[in-house]
Image 1 (cartoon, rainbow, N blue to C red):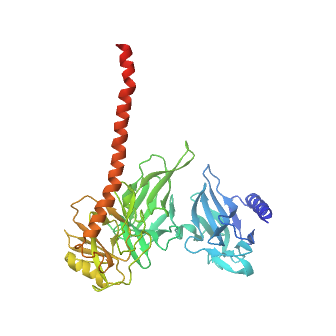
Image 2: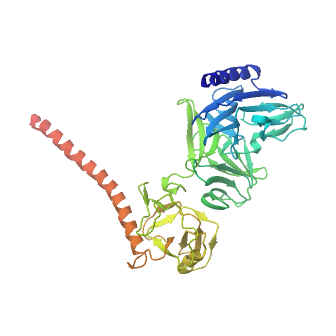
Image 3: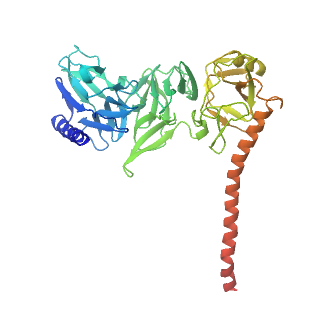
Length: 454
């Protein structure tokens, strides 16, 4: 069965490319068979269209992938080996038996499965569509006989923004970490460009770019030099690439949530990054598991207290609220990189702690001593170690009585000092110990030489 399927994919691939190098006309249909048995990591793909340009080229494919014990069917666009757009980005279409791509006589582009079930469509039926075309920018378009665009992939952004593509204000890119209910978003707002970590209906910013000129942002556009920012037709700012090579795309990485700009290196024959928004591991929102602390060395430590079963990764304390059930403990020398939209201004630290205690969905709070702002969180993520003397206080909600009579916050403060101190102290010991060993070894090695010269 697997051999037959592989042969079918190869035949479809060559057949499709020989029929249409640049576009597909109405009445077109291609079918991929799906294995009867699930194979983890299986990928079946038939390339249908490619652009006439030097490598790396844009290519369009119909794909079948084994995901979560099922097979998904999607229409994808590739730049070289990088997937830059997919019909299944926001919602996968799972099917059995077959995956069908069809451009109907009425001009509707569809993905279908068994029993003619439609899993995705362009919604352009009756609009005079005559063909599907792939532009040299990587924009996949449905056009009529007058070459007017009726649908385009650029209007449905995923996690990548290509050269020449625009994003208007109030639109966003989205990226989904593997095995997580959280997701990242890059959002274009009136006064800024921001990265967010989304948790249900809540979202927390962890990076912002605010143009120095206080003009409203109408749209942003990817160019060869960077991400250009416009007010109307006027470009007034830019997030600039540090490379002289022309940029090919911007991506919101699903593994880290970082924003990167990429160019193609002819010398190394691969895409390389020329800009990234966040340069340090501990500034990333999910650098550590829930209730984990990213230390100054870039490693993760976990909050573990007697009677407090956080165990890094097993959130959370939602549902525990009120002073009878829980209390707030302050973590010395740490802050959250996440900025919550849920906050109170001009309050004291004790009031801030009580606000979180009384809110059953709150598991942590951060208080800014200088501004009197209190931020509340429905998850304990993005926590990192900072220098002593910070004016920010980070507090986590724990079950009542966690101190066991050792004094307020003493257990947690002691834990932070010990764990962070041991981890960083061990790393410093290794560095200086290795340096000392090298100096002694070098001196011993040179002794015989000096003797011979004498």
